[in-house]
Structure formats: C-alpha cells, structure tokens
Image (cartoon, chains in turn blue, green):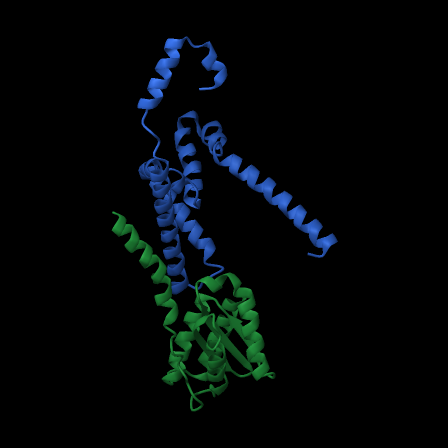
Length: 159
Length: 141
C-alpha cells in the first residue's frame, strides 16, 4: 500500500494493516525460481532431444535441424494446450513454461480457444494475437532498431 | 540436506571433466583401401593434437579432404576460430589439396559411417562419390 493511502487510514486501520502484513504468507520466490529453472530446462532438454533425433535419423545438419525442431515443439505445445495440460504446467512452473517457444505457442492457442464462442472472424481471428501480438510488435521493432544501429556502425565505423 | 547439496556440487564440478578427458582414438585407415587414405590419417593426427578437439573423423577423396571435429563443450563458444585454425594447419601440411573442416554433428556422423565402410572395404568408388556430394551439402550448413 502506498504512503498516500496510508495517511487517510485511521490508527486502528493502520494497526490492522501491520498485523495483517505480519500474518500474510510470504511469496516463495526462491522456490518458484527453482521450479521455473528446472521445468524450463526440461522443456529445452526435450527440444534438444528432438533436434538430436532429427540429426541422427533425417537429412538435417545442426543448422537446418532447428526449423523442424521448433515446429515439433510448437505442435506438442498446442496439443497440450488443447488438452488442458499446459495450463497446469504453467501454474506449477510460472515463467519456466512461458519463456521457451512452447510458451509463445501456448499464448496463441489458448487465446484462440478462449474466444472461439465469439465467432471465427472477430473471435478467433481478432483475439488470437491478443497476448502474442505484443511480443511480435516489440520483437520486430527491436530487431529493426538493432539492425539500423549495426548497419550504421558497419558503414561508418568499419566494425 | 546440506550433505546432499554438497554432493550435488561435487558432481557438478567433476561431471564436466569426465567426458572431456576421454580422447577417442581415431580410426587409421591406411593406404591399401579403395582410395589412399594416408593424407586423411595424418590430418586426423594434426587435428587431434589441438587442445580443444575431443574426437575427429576424416576422409579423403580425389583432391578433397573432409574433416569433422568434435569440440569440447566450453570451447564451442569459439567454433569459428577453431575451424579456421584447423583449416590452416591442414592446409600448411597439404597445400595442394582442398581442405574442408566442419564441426557439425551431422557431418561427424556421416564421416564416421563412411570411414567404417572404407575401412572394411564395403564401399565402391562410385558410391563414395554419391555420398561425397551429400556430405558437402551438410557442411555448407
């Protein structure tokens, strides 16, 4: 609670606030971090497994194997989102399940499923990128700015 | 609990060293095969003497030598420099050949298969030529 609001409270209310704060359950930050670390790492481990699989059994080398690997991971994530499993993983791991490419797929697929009742055009089509749109916009803008800086430095500074 | 953490820490520290120390002995194919492989054998020795390299595969065919190296985990940050260094080293030894150095896992696997087949004399020259083109494509990345 901010200081501005605190001043308006009566002394009894202030007392209550301090008491409530003491009794409040602490957020387990470190525990959440560890969970996110391990679940996120496990998702990446699966991704690495898929990539190695493609290198060993199909005609991909290390560089070209990235594309089918990402496609496979997105496909798995969307299936899990549709079956409602990914929500539970997300609840357990928090940011650990949101950062890899699977989290991005989940944010698109879940928005599309959620707004299905509003119709296909305005519902699914309009709301699909509600969460993922900001990622795309800022990703594109950031890439544009960085590319301009790199080009300018390369042209003038000879970096 | 504390003991467990300590144990984990020890494993983390030592775990990385186990894998790095086991230098694989490369397969020396010799000269009495379908195609003379002495240059490839020597290239293997040169590359394996580099500190960053754990294992190496190499095959020569006509004027080309293809070399695939497996690099230590930490040194993978400097893959570009390692490839350049390896290329220069072989080029210095055999200036008249076309040297291709790769650190790709796929090239490593394919060269391993090819080496095995050449070593056991299971492959004909025409088949090698067909495979050669494929491996060259993998190297381009």
